[in-house]
Image 1 (cartoon, rainbow over the protein chains, first blue to last red):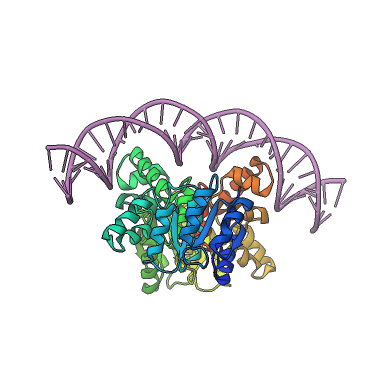
Image 2 (cartoon, protein in one colour):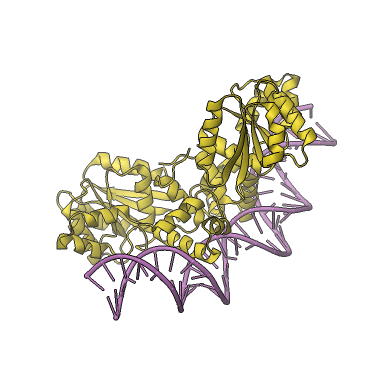
Length: 220
Length: 220
DNA sequence: CGGCGTCTCCCCCGCTCGGGGGAACTGGTC
DNA sequence: GACCAGTTCCCCCGAGCGGGGGAGACGCCG
């Protein structure tokens, strides 16, 4: 039931940090660590992780080659979350084009890291809605870091969806939100469904949690 | 639909602060202000608030007398939230004995203030579960500030209820919580119901919001 | 002009959720 | 021993929630 994560990074400090962050979550289990891409494939076969958190820049075999190798040689491969230090790392886009499922900056806050792992674990209908490769292509076509920003911002909510999420985060029911926004309850349900989809949330409670964890709404 | 609040305090600064905090909430409306207890009764008749946030120490007519007068003379009186500066203010207990529904420290964080108003507005099955007068009596009997602490802590959750709330705040369903705690789903439902009751929450989403707003769980 | 995204509303359906009861067992306390 | 709080489990039931699908109206933009 818990999400099984394999950490791949040449820096022990990063691995330790990721482990600390992820193991603090009840639904996430770190099942292994590797220091370079070459060690990944046998380890994946052995521990069968759901998600591989993979650094791009590594000795021996980098994250791109490791990603390609994983997808080519492993049956039912895990989701691959590319971890990087730099926002404009062209290796990231190569990795995404190689088949990675998402990417994450090392300087992300713990909550974002956790969130990214959960989303990736649930499939690609999440923070990176099936358009990762397209965005990477856009970037390659000269889109600059617009694609990077789009990826970072991830689940871009429309204005109305933002309104609805804010009211959800105040504890209002669909009917109450409808009354407040002066629209029908069916309309609210549509927006709520859109929000749930974009945030990768199963229900409104998880959406509100994400709203808090991401800083979309602030306590106090 | 919004909660109508009347502010009663002799200090304009406090009234302004309370107004700013409360008006920032979509579901709360400040419908009037009074600077002393004598002005409260006609104002209550006029604006029909749901909640009166009442200072205890005021010139002319203090909060205790104002509370008594309100409950004696107004039909269908509003809920009364006693606002005070000092934790061990014996006037508070007199006010509670006079019929106030709850009390709040002025140095409370904005979220706590908002929370208190919402809870009070929903009736006394809330932060102060019908035992306010009993606790006040305990205090009078020499319980020291134990009663004060009990009031402050308000909805004291049992250990198991805390476990359940923590897992609710991670977005787990009743079935998932049951699996994690290795109990039946009916058991979890019992705990969830208890948590909702104690927190004055209508559903798990509101309970999770309270958990965040109160600092019971921390983002990040 | 024709798409596309956004906002609006509608249908049906299944399920979880939450309220209302109650009941048994434990471990303390009086 | 009686009592109470806490934990565990059970029943029934209604309502809200969320998924699935569709559809019309508007404005923007290539």
